[in-house]
Each structure stands twice: as structure tokens, then as C-alpha cells.
Image 1 (spheres, rainbow, N blue to C red):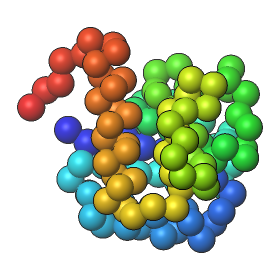
Image 2 (image 1 turned 180 degrees about the vertical axis):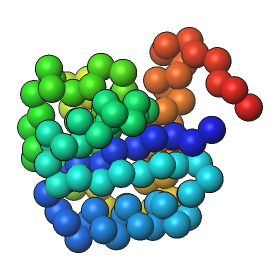
Image 3 (image 1 turned 45 degrees about the horizontal axis):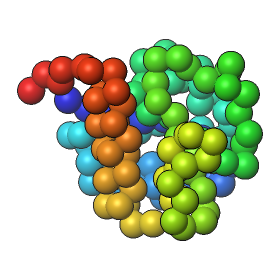
Image 4 (image 1 turned 30 degrees about the horizontal axis):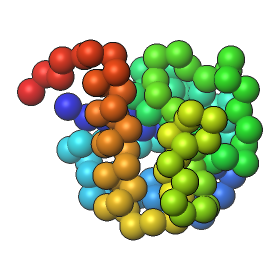
Length: 120
């Protein structure tokens, strides 16, 4: 099973580096799409039926604009924050392995909350 992840941040260099590295290292487990604005990211998340939408905390999305099907989390530059207003937080500048681990944890939490059974 591949986790569908959409990442939205205005930082083009970050998107290029992280998107390429995640796709290279975890191609069998992740399908990563990157966008520089929340509108396109949200539209893509809806079209792809994404599992996770990672949004830069500086983008300040309107909750009504976000896809209802997928889980979203904020990307933040600050270390040690677990959530913002109940929304999970992922540290933006960390190793690709740690980023992948955070994505998987968010996905598994969502699966558990929705009581979904995963196919092998």
C-alpha cells in the first residue's frame, strides 16, 4: 500500500529537495506531490484521494477548503511541537527518514481513529 501525500509550502527549494528525496527513497511506500499554494494542493489532494496533506503553518489554510477525506498536518520550523490547535505537527527541517517516520505515524493514527483495516 502506498500512502498518498501532498505537501504545500511556498519554499520552492524545500519542495524540490524533499519531494525528490521522499520519492527516491520511499517510492514503494509513498506517492508524494508538492505544491506552492494551498488551493492547488487541496485540489490535488481531492483528486488523488490523498491520505495526508502537509501544509506549511505560514499558509494559514481555511479549514473549509481542506479535503474532508484526508488527514492534514502542519509543517513547522520549530522543533518539539506536537500539535497546533489539535492538528498534528511535522518538523519541516529534519532528516528525510524522520519525515517519513512522522508521515507513517500520522497515517497510522488516522487509520486507527477511523477503525480501518489495511490490506496487505
